[in-house]
Length: 183
Length: 140
Length: 117
Image (tube, each protein chain N blue to C red):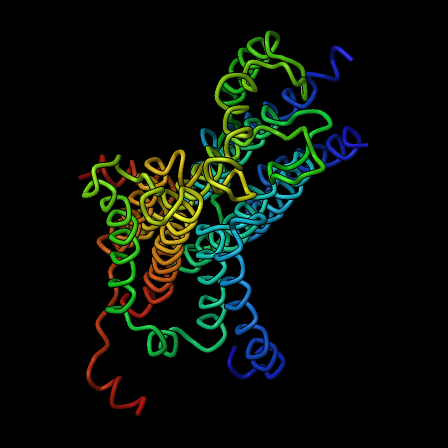
């Protein structure tokens, strides 16, 4: 049953991605991106990644889509139609896709419990997290305690992005007459 | 969008529920899916909804830019400081077990404070970025 | 089951290539950033599908469950999602400033204006 849901959802994703290529109305492309993020969140739930699904639904569908729409309001909604057929990008994409598929031929099959990624560190976290830390959500315990230093770096990246947007766009100080009008 | 009655009334009912849900996700990250990042984004989504319906000027009266800038720094400082305290007691950086009698309660408190710092900074950054984008047209 | 075991990965590679195609073939800067986000989301799906264990459950410890999916890719992708939105916000802020400087966001028109200086 899981395989059927997986295949159907991935099929929807391919349709949405192909539609996003073909459209020239950027408002519709942003909406396609929102649908893509929501379908990805559903796939994450099917693949047992509930924390990631939560974050992808909130961030991808909420914040990313709103920011793209705000940008479209500032720069314009329509994409200029290309003058010539893009032959070279298609060739590059096919070669890269072929190389990646050749690379996956050695990978372990989907869902096998003895894949190399499930050895070494992950069973140690799953086994010792109830004893050493005592909270149920292993993802939170790894994020905030075992790998807390990486989370500090990630928070610094978000901080830097906020500072960067403030430096690029800035926020206008409210003029005195505006403040008087609102009272 | 302030003139549309349906949007105005529904948003006034829903926005407090969104904030409450964000606080729930923040503090129940230990027992179910959730944590600082999700909660910060949901809280920012509530504020962004208010800004979309009632206008950026009213959003800036609710949360002033000075306050948001202070929050952005405060969350990151809280996280770094919580990691710095174990160093003063001779343990490693970000070793949360020193905060309580035994390892479990210490880790609980440490994770609580760390996730709180994450949630505060993420919410403030998302709202600041939205205000910077949405208030840009008046500058042109 | 041989092809079916790898089918997931091939479809995700197809999704990655559509996002990549949008990035390199479109001239509009905003569409390039949207394509980059599509590429990013499909890379996340690839990583999470690597961490799935058949018959496992979400990594939230309960007494009656013994087989869990791998929590490490989840932690990695959680970080990557939030960092991705931060870089998208910075990229879009740069696009807004480019529009104000050149009055266009089409790549060839920007090159034309630069070369005619």
